[in-house]
Amino acid sequence: MSTVVETDVLIVGSGPAGASAALALSTYGVPNIVVTRYASLADTPRAHITNQRTMEVLRDLGVEQDVIAHATPQHLMGDTTFCTSLAGEELGRVRSWGNDPLVQAEHELASPTRMCDMPQHLMEPVLVNAAVARGTSLRFRTEYLSHTQDADGVTATVRDRLRGDTYEIRARYLIGADGGRSKVAEDAGLPMGGQMGVAGSINIVFDADLSRYTAHRPSTLYWVLAPGATVGGIGAGLVRCVRPWNQWLIVWGYDVEAGAPDLTTEYAESIVRQLIGDDEIPVTVRSSSAWTVNEMYAETYSAGRVFCAGDAVHRHPPSNGLGSNTSIQDSYNLAWKLKLVLDGVADPKLLETYTAERAPVGRQIVTRANQSIRETAPIFEALDGLSPQTPEQLWANIAARKDATDAAETQRTALREAIAFKVYEFNAHGVDLNQRYASDGIVPDGTPDPGFTRDPELHHQPSSRPGARLPHAWITSGTRTLSTLDTVGKGRFTLLTGIGGERWVRAAEAQAVEIATVVVGPGREYEDPYGDWARLREVSDSGALLVRPDGFVAFRHASAAEDAAALLTDALERILGRA
Ligand code: FDA
Image 1 (cartoon, rainbow, N blue to C red):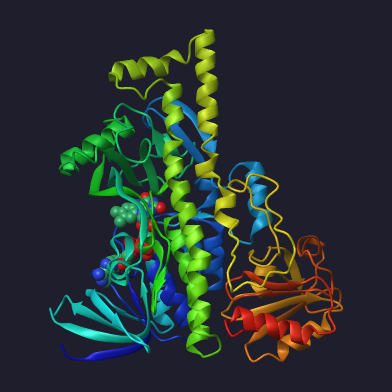
Image 2 (image 1 turned 30 degrees about the vertical axis):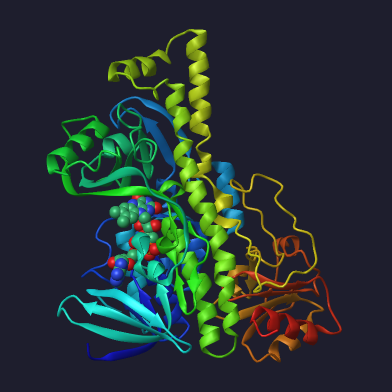
């Protein structure tokens, strides 16, 4: 062992969590190094659904347009189809991912961004390229081996897999973004709840022109209910679009007790053929790999100067498309806190809010994703297809739904309802956007928790109460139309007020920590021509919202205050852990 390399933040892993941590830190000017075990970024599509909250994060980090340029747009994602094979019978559809007209309106009202389908092998280069362009040092083929920490920092030992030697990297903080088998989380002793290896799954990546079976019902997901589809896996066979309509990924289950099958090309092709249902279509299998469905989450995301993010602390199946979304949002929550602590602006206590805010989200999404698998079973039950039976019997049950009998009508109703219930997987807008934080990084304003008036998993409910994400409203500045969310972020706090809020503005400008000020009202820098902001802000014109760099409201006051300076100073002392 020879050299010791030094940096402020060492990040282990270049997946969505590590790459976005690097991007945010470099954007904020924090020196960082990423080490990653392999010679390249993700070489298979993996995670893909990219929700509005993640797009807001990427918008703030300046890469939203790059992602849109590479992604499949929302309108091609939405006809989630249940069928016996792509060429076979269709059993029903769910308008998904904000493509139901009513849900679409909710998406448009909630955010300036749109969902998209951004496969992981395209997402990682966008994040990593921007991070490196802004200062991140990236070391491929470099494996994290172990770490020790003391009062001033962390010393990690890594192996250069090209040369074979090991060396040390000394950092003030270490981020373990090293995925579902995180050695950093293990070495840091982060306690995990739940279970690994709940079910077995296989991913098969292949090329085939399937436009004949898909272009008329454009979707990211085609679910195949066929014999064997309930063994392991994620609830049914899945044909997932990677690029419309010629690059694909199949997810198929296996019995985890029996172990993964031998993934020969012949085996992979046989699964592909079964799910397409048309042997005439030319198919090229690119790769196949086995993985397991996990149901695990950490209660604590950090130990001393070591912080974990992404799959390192929450492990779950792809249902609801929450994997990389939650990973990116973890890192976004952590990065600004590290910046302010490293700058000496905040006390290290601020970093304790990371677990307080993100661990409940991790637990919720692990539970939701696994629940979504279980909620596929009623579709099979409606076809009487769950109990062991012959393929002929399943096909007969599927055919029976076309009969003009009372029993068939009952079956049709059950099938329709079971498929419609899958909105909890494919349109869970509330799961994507309703995160509300309670921690020492949030100053309560004494108002009661408004809760949710509608199903909080399905519907987003904006609020400006401390702990909620700043509501989105379109406002204007001269000829420019922008979102309220565009006025916040960029690694700094923002104070929003209106006419009569001059004391708040002066108080913000007098703080040692950088606070951007936004005054919305007639004749001011920003105007609210539609009145949307006035309806959403939940404070009067002269009131104030103090928004953290991650877009969450940290403090609010209903109206003007004589002692605005003292109130704001006190709030910041608490938020920054200095009280
Ligand atoms: P991620 O696993 O992406 O990244 C971990 C990083 O750490 C990698 O760069 C790795 O090289 C690095 N690393 C690990 N150990 C290291 C060490 N000791 N030293 C240095 N570097 C190390 N999700 C989904 O929503 N839909 C899907 O279809 C799929 N499919 C899928 C397939 C496969 C094969 C996998 C592995 C995963 C999925 N996922 C998925 C899950 C999804 O990919 C996952 O939620 C996110 O990638 C999590 O992002 P992270 O950055 O946390 O970990």
